[in-house]
Length: 101
Image (cartoon, rainbow, N blue to C red):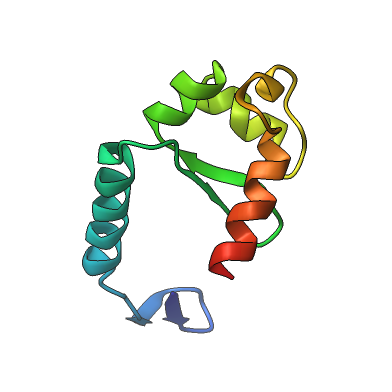
């Protein structure tokens, strides 16, 4: 956030600002992504609304869809073709949330 103080004529006479170092947050997010990608199982991360925000390469392999296709489909919505794995993506997500929430 930046605030600028000016004179009546519009000349800038001062400013004040606030900055926040988000280095630690970025490093934490990168670590989560590396761990997720290294997982030997399909992993899906969804937000509170059920929208997919992150998947790993095993998820792409298992369901046959790209990360972008899965993100557009949404976590709680059954994706065509996923029934070949025994359960729809939506059913798998519901089981996961019951186990961990």
